[in-house]
Image (spheres, rainbow, N blue to C red):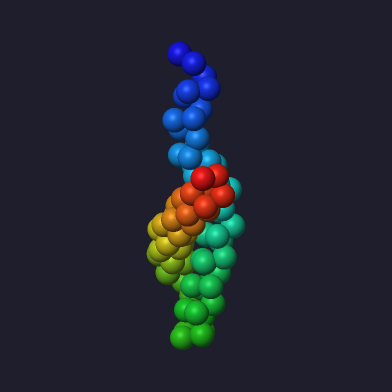
Length: 79
């Protein structure tokens, strides 16, 4: 198996995965903080259970956002 042909075939998915991983954690934290602050405006305190629900919501949103952004970025830059 030629490594060069393997790299050319999987070049884009590898870079999409790397960029998604690099962006996921900071974006999730940012979105979670925004969700919690929005919830705090509506009510004075936010319970730990509500924070867990908001963390799951932020995880899903950031994963979707990072994958789409990474894919579009790799397509634009590398092709």
